[in-house]
Image (cartoon, rainbow over all chains, first blue to last red; front, side, top):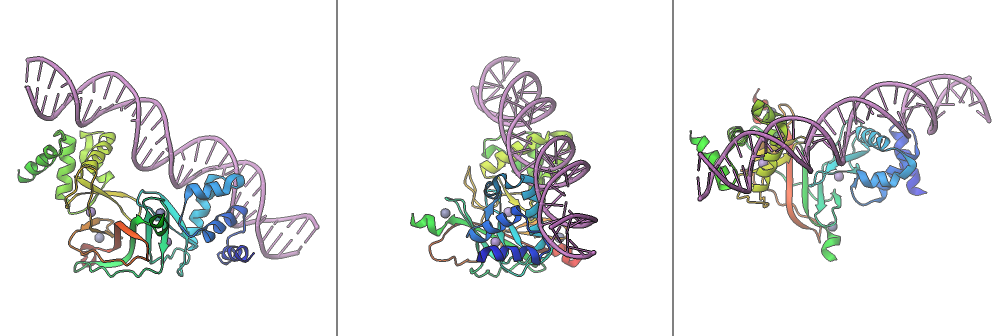
Amino acid sequence: MEREIQVSDLLRQHDLKKTPARLTVLRLLSQSGFAVGFAELEQALGELADKVTLYRLLKSFEDKGIIHKTIDPEGFPKYALCQDDCGTHRHVDRHIHFSCTQCKKTSCLPHVSIPTVILPEGYLAEAFQFNISGICKSCALA
Amino acid sequence: MEREIQVSDLLRQHDLKKTPARLTVLRLLSQSGFAVGFAELEQALGELADKVTLYRLLKSFEDKGIIHKTIDPEGFPKYALCQDDCGTHRHVDRHIHFSCTQCKKTSCLPHVSIPTVILPEGYLAEAFQFNISGICKSCALA
DNA sequence: ATACAAATGCAATACATTTGCATTTGCAAG
DNA sequence: CTTGCAAATGCAAATGTATTGCATTTGTAT
Ligand SMILES: [Mn+2]
Ligand SMILES: [Mn+2]
Ligand SMILES: [Zn+2]
Ligand SMILES: [Zn+2]
């Protein structure tokens, strides 16, 4: 019940009511080692909640700084729990994403150091979005 | 007429017929220093061509390796001429993109060197997509 | 000038996401 | 344990974006 308590707390901390749909989504995201696509979340919900509800809760989670969205190289949005100190309408997800061209899974890579990009004179960097695609560890071994 | 000849050649080289819509799009892309959004291209075409035609010609340009598409931080696709040696179904657009949060313009930065990202053991990088957002040169000065 | 494949226009379709509104539900106060 | 109410949800409709089918037009090689 360790994890259950964690996701409940996450909701309470952000003034969001504890509903079955929200708990299911947060549980899946906290257990999966990957960024999860809409379809997979929808399937996990099953009859538990409508597709519209999923859209809405994802939106509110994102607004609250609980999850972040990343677009994989094929254009599909993937969702993952924020690991950094994100807050309401303030995201600081400074990490690289890796998408496997074979298994199509997207991973957050918070331990990979962010390279410094030297921009031309006059440009001011504020945020970035780095996606690397290739073969993931699992697929490489198989 | 310098540029006109260039875009005509571009079409001929890729076995694409020289049509008003295609010429207009290529001229705009070759003149604009930025990656251009669908809406702007559509406006440039005016009555000259249908929206569907624009979708189709962009698709064929991309397939042929004439243009590449990049998704800006707000999710809008932007199109730009390929600068590297891309070919039919073979893109090698290895450059960084910069999107200004103020003027919303996206630029290709072919002269910015690509940083080396050290991935965890077992991962094999094949391609990347780096987008930096911030304030562009023009907006910084203004 | 002719012929034919390629390109286009228009309508219909497909699909993803958003919105409006009536109903239900979580939760806090009494 | 009830009650009250804002928050959350379900369902239908609306929106927005991109694709497809098919009849017609157009570019270009001969
Ligand atoms: Mn991430
Ligand atoms: Mn580019
Ligand atoms: Zn994989
Ligand atoms: Zn700018």
